[in-house]
Length: 552
Image 1 (cartoon, rainbow, N blue to C red):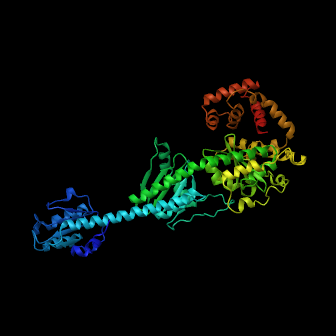
Image 2 (image 1 turned 180 degrees about the vertical axis):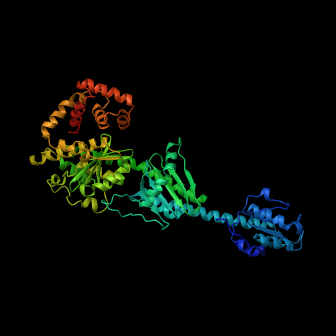
Image 3 (image 1 turned 90 degrees about the vertical axis):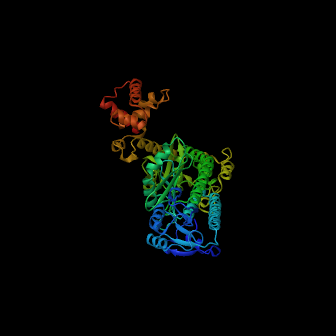
């Protein structure tokens, strides 16, 4: 911050004498301007200490001269005596006092250049202090980035550095983490796994919603940029983090150049942290995907041991399966920390404990569309057969620090059981679990077709009638009637296209929108379906039969 006029006037060797405008001596002096012009204002920017000997000024010029300086935003006036005037004309003191303009008398022995040098030294000192503070802040941000929860720690540190708030947003604009150092907002930083309302409080979500237009502008910009917003009460900066998301900071005070430097440094650290974490997240997602495949095959022991090597465990209570269609699976996985997630055929599959399923569904819906299965898939009972080599109490997940991913992946391959040497009873897959989990995943996928943004399988039309059918006979019927579509050698998914078409009651536009294709493409697919099945899709009986087959 620039030195004040009070600080300059207090420099003893300058021998400045205050004559008027004492109430304005706390104004900053941004520079010293020497001028003998009757109107120097065209050459001023505002914030200067103007020095003059009054060579061309008389007592009658006092009021218009002072008025022009005040209108230009000049900080103060220094009137040199001993050359053109033996003393400052009283008219100038009166005009300055009336206008509230600080006026000092500069003695003959004090050269104007001495005042200029003093102000320049003070400005340089202030700038050095600000740069030093900026370097220190960057060091603190860098140390925060090296912590285990790097991005979260950087956001927390940044909020304290600027004395405001900071939001970390995913690519869709949803809140990943929020921090506030103003004391005016409350953030629930200690929400447990069952409290999946996100790390941010209501204020963070409301702030993120208010920034949606700005985030949309940044998302559509051809090159990366940033936005600055100002209101009477708040100043906000929004920056992209590569293509990994955005962050926003707000302060009740305008951002100084040094504050902008600190914000930019935080942006660089956040971008680097998110990019560096991508490989680790990808590797962890691949492991979880393999675990899901093991569970679908009934290989509970192998699944449990694989997760245990990463300091994780299978859900210990009945679960509900979610099929999530999201543009940023990493952000949703991060938001659902503590809940098992795994990528599967373009979707993110979530095994949500029944007791917290509604909270998990609500949080997942903030990141995209969600299909929800019927509850009650029991994995814990099957996991109980895992021998003592797999920790059953979850201490690896809840105890000391979780192993890093590289070490965890090494342990995965060390601890996967030798299937040839295991007891025969351990090698038998749990068919009941495999069937139940596969059925629940299928239910979640079917519900996802109608999700906007959430759909539950138990609420789908026709569920009551289907529950009366013999499961084995019904499944055989469905497999037979849909076989021509499943065997059709094309990249187009005719089964899902038929499902969307029937779910939309034959409305082309609605069904095409669900699939993300043009309605003419959908018409072609339905024509192909009709030809392969040898059935008229305009026949209500045919539609009902096909819908039942799809729901089984």
